[in-house]
Image (cartoon, rainbow, N blue to C red; front, side):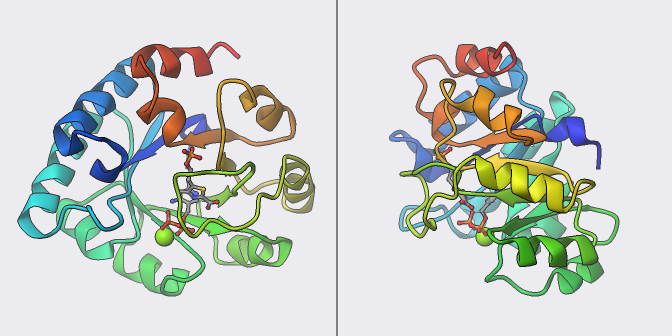
Length: 210
Ligand SMILES: Cc1ncc(COP(=O)(O)OP(=O)(O)O)c(N)n1
Ligand SMILES: Cc1nc(C(=O)O)sc1CCOP(=O)(O)O
Ligand SMILES: [Mg+2]
């Protein structure tokens, strides 16, 4: 995978917006105009869209991403990723084995969440395309987030496995992003820093001028 795709990786689902999917699509387009380099659809939680509505929403997100030539990644849901022929899938430690995703979804981007150095070593052995390391800081966007690991863990991970692309996630804002990059992350992954910004396009642009 091209590491530059990880530079500014925006994640969201309709649950991240008070006005639901309409607002989600508007913000995604603003984020694309502002220069996000990757997008992950993470439709999760009690208010998540289901069935045909979730597929229609996902298709609309994918069309926008294609228009801006930004990879469209699906969180967790391999059926959706296959149905839409997404560019990749992001999976967590509690999901099925990476090998099963690779078999079902060959030649696609596979991202894996890691929280420890041993999980990172396994990710290298499994030849995933990138790892998501987090939460770096406290986050309100994931109910079951682990304890924050801090920026020094990024440096430790990069030293341990220098060739594995790392995207940092969890509580990343315009104020702390420069430190995250200075500690060795290849890219930044955010939900609220863009989804809850007063001006999502301007916020996205600012991440490119840290
Ligand atoms: C880029 C990136 N990194 C980490 C995660 C978290 O994935 P996971 O641990 O599977 O948790 P959920 O997002 O599924 O709640 C991610 N989604 N993206
Ligand atoms: C989806 C997700 N995964 C995390 C992890 O630690 O694996 S933290 C997180 C939420 C990130 O949202 P925000 O940018 O608003 O903090
Ligand atoms: Mg997951």
